[in-house]
Image 1: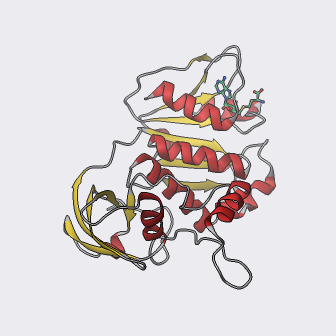
Image 2: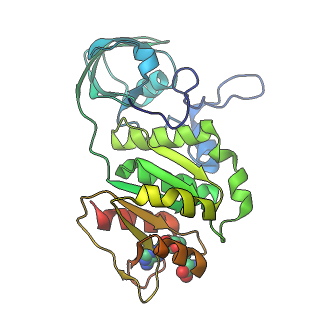
Length: 287
Ligand code: SAH
């Protein structure tokens, strides 16, 4: 059975366009300007390469059916894709198949789709990522890159150089985290959400949980030191990859991971930002 990392509340939650004090929607141009300032979170300008539907709203165990959308997905389709009746859109059932939707009708309130689900989502990467929690902005970008590249198992871990306050960020709450993961899926045309686990204590995680996670797998620590071996490539077997915080892992943490059987790997002498290091490592290891 497919597991969702976070419980969905209601239908897929997409952010609503902002309103002014009188409850009116801002004109699009102002909305774009605002979004540009506040981090472009609107579906208006997000890449929606697939329209995701939730099993709960699909509500049927079949591969064909009809669905009427009235929420942000409808607004995105209408304002960005601007389809005519008869046009085809890409759709995906969360945790299930991808397929096509034929536009039956579209008016000022809703769009009616005739859906046919017929193909598997892209294969996941065989990696479990252990990511020392970066600051929220970097976390958001890094997670989106991970989801887009197909990482399905992510442990956000503590480390000496992780600022304590990062654990308090509202971004780690269900809504914003879920929105980021969904945006990653929509970008990649994928349907399977990753599992995101929060581990606020390094030592118990490494001593109690890591040996089980590592069983039968190789573990790599990305650590840009002179003695790190060059990053391998073309991996197909499941493995674990640990990426440090913005200040790097401290020697004690590297030792603890090495005690568990991890090996240090590097991408060369350049020190990369976390958000650059993660996709570069995943690219080199697998893609
Ligand atoms: N200030 C730290 C670097 C931190 S960069 C130092 O000087 O060591 C943040 C994380 O990105 C690192 O912990 C590592 O996991 C990863 N990283 C950055 N550049 C890398 C490289 N060239 N090779 C491998 N990993 C790298």
